[in-house]
Amino acid sequence: MRRILRYSMLAVIAAVLTVATAMFIPQRVDDQTGLSVVRCGYPVAFITQDFSRLDPPSFPQFYGCGPSLEDPCAISWPAFFLSWLMVFIVVLGVYTARQHFIRK
Image (cartoon, rainbow, N blue to C red; front, side, top):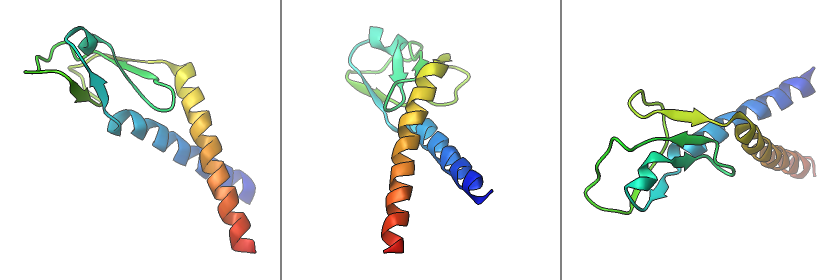
């Protein structure tokens, strides 16, 4: 039971980190046409957000995807799952290494 709880917590941590990458890692936009397709998320981009309503004074600009009713977005669930899986593997590796070194 403890093992299931432990892995569930690691899965939730990986999900939070995956969503945080889309919100806090800004993406570079080099021109006006690039504003309509800003892809966010790491390691695989899983959110596409449209910032074409904005009119920045110069380029390049950096934008982060986030919850906004003014800027429509689309989520690719397969890409999100792939990103989550990659982050989960890293989190699990760090957790396992930490447990290994604590025992020694």
